[in-house]
Image (cartoon, rainbow, N blue to C red; front, side, top):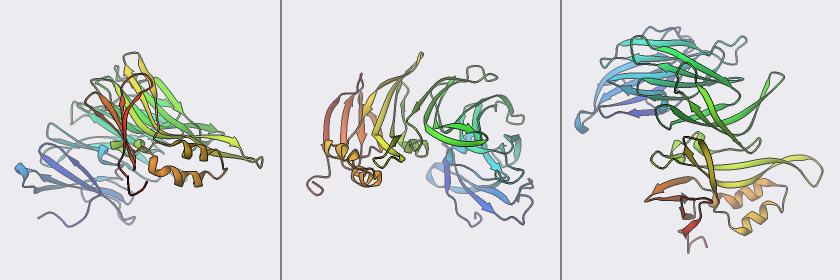
Length: 353
């Protein structure tokens, strides 16, 4: 029987399911597997699927904490996991990150450690023999890892740029999309700005490049797709990219004080080609009455309550069309310039009016 416990991150391959749970015990100096730690380690329960009848296989342990399910991966039967351990905000900071590789029996066979001292992982993506890790404290290093030899994984290259990516998504074998935030360094104090979309070129793993970057809005701008990958749509065969967004701007209130407000709440749509990212348009479910109310008051939260039922949470590609979904509306759009609406349906009627 497996050891008792719980898990909050799950990754599944065709053959196995992995359930991860981070543990904190600052009296502990090493993991149950013998790796050094600073009181934080992650336990992973591995179950063999066995044609629909899962059975416990082994317990894996690594130092540090896991970010999410994309921090785990299986390739050729080997399990790969990325974690951060140590304290990023200690003085001096002690945090560092690493990638650990286990063979099918659960034996640790390879690792890359010491990544980005003083920072923590913000996003991870594994793709075949490659791994991509984004860390952040003041700048965004993108680490490119060569995992083709699981016993000798190596860092092939890294790219340091402002901002950070909270979600990485493969476009193909040579390009990645990153969704996160732009940042500005003000005399050592880092502040976040607008939503940042990056197109990374990793054709040469030793020299990764940010081929194109788009920044939307100012401080406060936000996309749920950065932390909820189901809200992020990329359709490889068409190059369609879409994600929900709240776009904010700074403005001067009637009282003369400066403040922030939402200027757009909907979905952004792009087309990705060999030339880069091209905007196709914006989609919003907000009715005119709600849009007008946005400008009628300096109190944005009053408008936010009005807007929430019309906030787009999912873009979906189906039968050559883009579908956008909010709490009240399903809309169908053509994938063309300005993404014209074909049909919309208010499925809250007649209950909500």
